[in-house]
Image 1: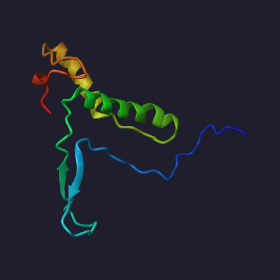
Image 2: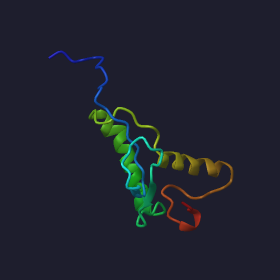
Image 3: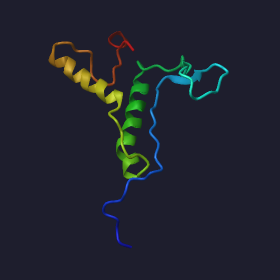
Length: 113
């Protein structure tokens, strides 16, 4: 078969946003999608962004989406993940004399989520 050089973008795509540390939404009983009441987030008490493991897992998920997901055509676009911006902040902070440590942040005294 002849390879498609300029493959048209799929029209069967959906934009998603991943919210870390939220396990659901508390909504009123009303299911009307046109109401402006979107409900209140239900936070996951077990989610700990200060955990080294959590920071590394979020980084791995973002890297997967940016590389493997795009290569396998499961993902068409990834906005910059917040954990990458956090890593950039840590590097930048050292340039202005405020060293919060290297990524992942292991010292909880330097981490306020």
